[in-house]
Image 1 (spheres, rainbow, N blue to C red):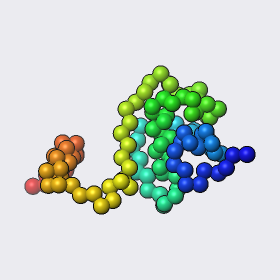
Image 2 (cartoon, rainbow, N blue to C red):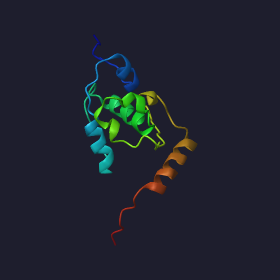
Image 3 (cartoon, rainbow, N blue to C red):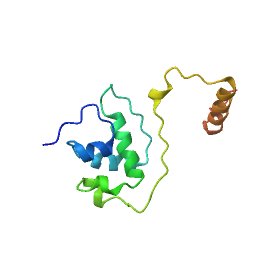
Length: 118
């Protein structure tokens, strides 16, 4: 009998060694909606597992999704680039002044400017 995945955040580890409750129908809805989502949930609520599951899906790791709802609905021939930041690794991290300027300059390029009121 498989164990419950307490504290496990890796989708591939869970699929290979633990009990997994299939929630891929919801992941499919999120991906297909084309909206932006902000994941604001309490600690230990499955945010990291959700992101890792999305990463595996977008990287077309088909074997991990066998016998799940999404398996025959996803185009496994397409792979999407994934950039994942682990915010936990930024604890105590400080940008140098030059790095701050680069980050700010990139943000300014992509930020939507507010209308000027005269």
